[in-house]
Image (spheres, one colour):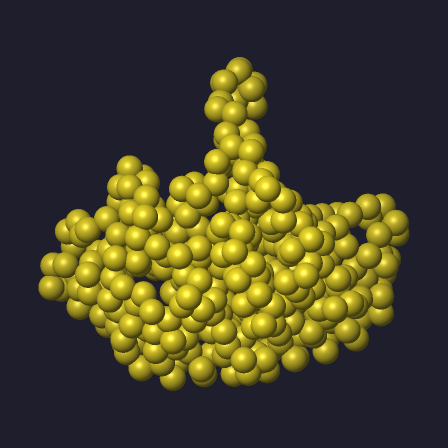
Length: 399
């Protein structure tokens, strides 16, 4: 039997068949395959900072190894780390959480997965703005929930408003997912709208799950976390990550802030899956959260320069339009004017041929819920952005 035939003969669970592989990870794999063949690929696909992890954080990880801090810890993380998570969030956003309301996980995605698994049951509705991060929809489906898609307006910068959310609420609504700044669009939700969504959800007994992975990469000058809304926190789950904030993607450390029953349930699930986050990573995370924060602001400022540079470059390509992202480190150009040309039928076709022919890695919009866009990560150097944009210009110009 061939490997494909063998897999077809295996009866897998219904829940694993509800989901698809991550679109971003598929692009990374394909780009790596080309590189292994000696092909020079400009990588706009990776969703991770190009910066090195700050030295004081690396030193803390190395110090933990030398100090033999290499044993199991409590499942939700050490008391030191949970206190550091709570303290950092209080200082930066004026939130009011206790250690018991915090859990550390093996990356932000792990925290998100666990939160959805403990909150969403079969048939529950989850309001999800479009475009959405690739994993939201599949994690909800894995839990048995149904995504109710909230379509946003590209002309309005893909912004989500409270009025748009309110229109989709039904008696079956269990969770509203917010992601501001957004991956992939970079849209930032107005603080007043976020407050109104949280207030409305609290009133209706609905959970707000706020993915704030990019909360420190907000370029509007109005950084905001729903965790600041202390009076509504009994119906909120705030999800965070050190990956983007401190350039720690490979370290895998995320967290959640939520009411004690939710945190306890997440810890129970975590105890039967990943257990505690890596011990040495926890020490590095404490150094990140309690140490100097100038590295965060320095990276944010450079991202603004890179954003302006790449958007200007993309807009200079005839036929490409691009909204100005207000956060994160992605541009989300619209390539719909090229569909129908040279056999291109979808954004996946565009991204596929950009990779194979122009050797530029991007992520097709279908993975984010839209069919007219590709995602471009500008977390790289200006020189690399220029190389990639020029390759894209030649590719699109030849269609």
